[in-house]
Image 1: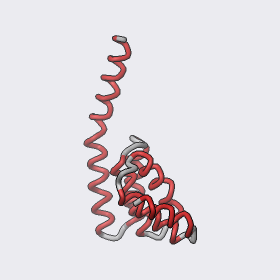
Image 2: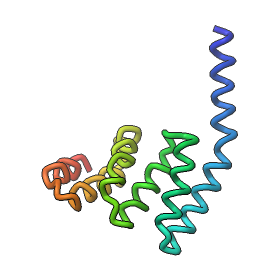
Image 3: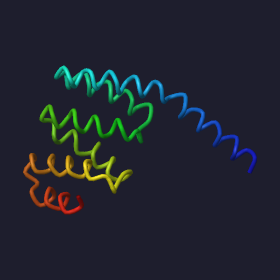
Image 4: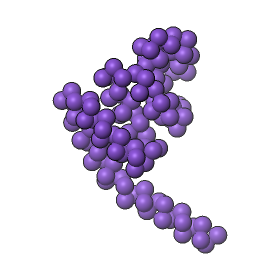
Length: 116
């Protein structure tokens, strides 16, 4: 039990140590998106998701950046992952449905809309 608690404490410490890095990547990605450079924003967010694949802010932001650059197919897995973590958040579902609609997957898009 003690070993488990030590491991858990170490994992929490790692997550806290990564937070400034993720915050910095998110800020740089937001600046890139504001300037219309969605390619740079996507690259920055991908770096963050390599550090923490469950980074909710990063999943949302990369989904949005990919959607805004008309890369709907690439956005779908990120947004689908986000909705698995935050199933109650309507924005993730809505953007996922909009991607499905743009891809011509109308029945999937309608199913997504009914969740929101």
